Image 1 (cartoon, protein in one colour):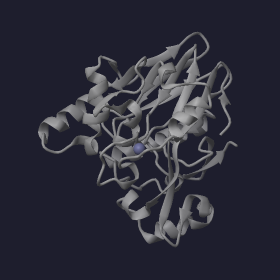
Image 2: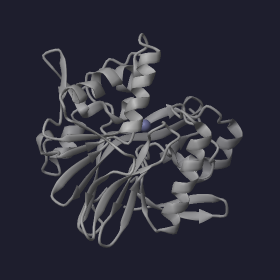
Image 3: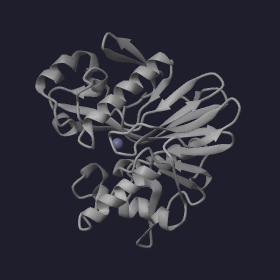
Image 4: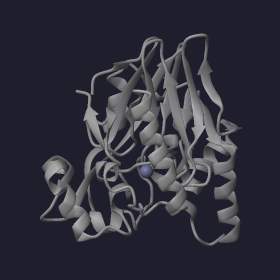
Amino acid sequence: MRTLDLGGVRVDRIVEIDPLWVDAFWFYKNIDQAALDRNVAWLGPRLYDPSARMFAISFHSWLVRAGGLNILVDTCNGNHKERPTMHWQHRLKLDTYMRALAAHGLTADDIDVVMCTHLHTDHVGWNTRLEDGRWVPTFKNARHVFSRREYEHHVARQKETPDVPIGHGSFRDSVLPVVEAGLVDFVADDHALFHDLEENVRLEPSHGHTPGHVCVSIEGRRDKALITGDAIHHQIQLREHQLVNVGDFEPEKARATRLSLLNRCCDEHRLMLTCHFVGPTAGYIRRDGDLFDIEHLE
Ligand SMILES: [Zn+2]
């Protein structure tokens, strides 16, 4: 994907894994064959493999450059994490992610702000890296911005079930080390990451997938975009709003949030930047009766 220039704010996609093929019946708890059959033609082989009944998804971050700040939104799976039940993120040794940052002239030390839309394992991974057997912050010069509500939800879950590793272990190995290093700002769900007279980057509450899930609204001098986190996971949900993702905490609320964000992107001609659509990912949303389509950018 080429750099998006919204007017004073630039956005790039930093890819860790694209594509990863996932079982449709694992990914959506309530999917059935009829829903797959209804969508097979328009999805096409790039997004859905009907013989294996698998969806193509991506793991990437969004690099937002505004007001001299390098802001990284979500940090994918990360390397060397112990995830024996999650094969795609178990003990990864990928060089794609840091190479993608380097392609934009950046190293980990150049990141000023790390923002996680929510604290699931595939959105916090690169927060830490393994050094001499310890998890240490990857982006040591960055303030890490977490929704206070989201963090407290995970702390409460950890207290309820102390023997069960929250987030397949990611809360312990990818969230707590940056908290303990004093690098985290716990913020309200409408916190501004950056703003001046004509440009702004701010959080917006979008609860449902998790209790403190936030989106990131980006407004440049010319154009607007919305990083939707996990409010939507795959293109099939543009036309099958009822689908419940394996990670949805409150499915009904997640569905209402998804519809509201899709309508908003449509009405405001706001580019939608999702966290799991395969490349080219970014696109404008069009309404088609009660359903939606996406017109991808190059
Ligand atoms: Zn996710």
